[in-house]
Structure formats: C-alpha cells, structure tokens
Amino acid sequence: MENLIKADRLDEILRRVGAALWMVQNLETQSAMFYLLRIKAEKGIGFEKGTEMLIQQQKKTFGNTLRSITSSNILPQELQEKFNKILAERNWLAHGSSIQGYSAIESEEATFDFIERIENIKNEALALMKTLRELAVNYAAEVGVTPEELQSGLERAQKMWFENEII
Image (cartoon, rainbow, N blue to C red):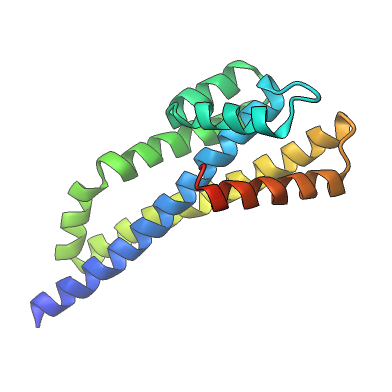
C-alpha cells in the first residue's frame, strides 16, 4: 500500500513539474520576443528577419536574455526583481528540484510543500507572461502598431513557427 501512495505522489509531482516547466519555457520564449521587440528590432525589419533574430536569441540562456532586458532599464525595478526570482526558481526547477522531489515522494507534508513551490513557479511565470504581453502591446501602440496589426502578425508568426517547427 505504501508503494502505491508513493507512486501516486510521484505521478502528481511529475505532472506539476511538467506543467511548471512548460510555463517557464513559454516565458523564456516570450521574454526573447519582448527583448527583440523593445531593444533589437527596427521599424520595417520584416517577418523573416525578425524570425531569424528570434531563433538566434532563443539559442541564448534565459538568464542571458533577462540580463539583456534588465541592463537596458526598460523594466521597473520591481519587475526586474520578479524576473530575477523566477530565473532562480527556474534554475532550481531544471537543475535541483529532483533532490527535494525524492523527499516529497516519501512524505505527505513534503509533497504539499514541494507542490506549493512548483505551483508558485507556474503561476508567477504565467503572471510575468501576461505582464510582458501588456508591455509589448503598449509599446507597439506607442510606435504606431494597431492592436489588429499586432494580433494579425502574432497569428501569422505562430502559424509559421508551429507548421515549420521553428521554435
């Protein structure tokens, strides 16, 4: 019976870790896109050149992208601190969570603590994605891109990226 309980805990932990990791990966992509939009892109850059720039940016680490964003001083300090925290949590999730995860399999209390941390990572990544989207939309409006043009461009990009497995 104890092994069944541990197997159920492991299943729950792995599902939560997978969801959190997926969310963080999406934040990494969105952060790279935000960096390019705000710092690197020039008006009239073109879809193909923008896509190539994104591919190159995504070859860099999340930490590298965040350092580039924060060094440009385009984010308020409070938001920079949130990104620094999610980077540390992302690194723990990717590189160190399995150690704590083993303890969580053994103990119900440790399971709850572990899952709470994982859920916090997932929720913070989602919140930061929403914030970046809002900042990107506002910036696009400042430089004369209508919401309709922005949405159309995003849909075109996603269609091409997913059909061609670019990102």
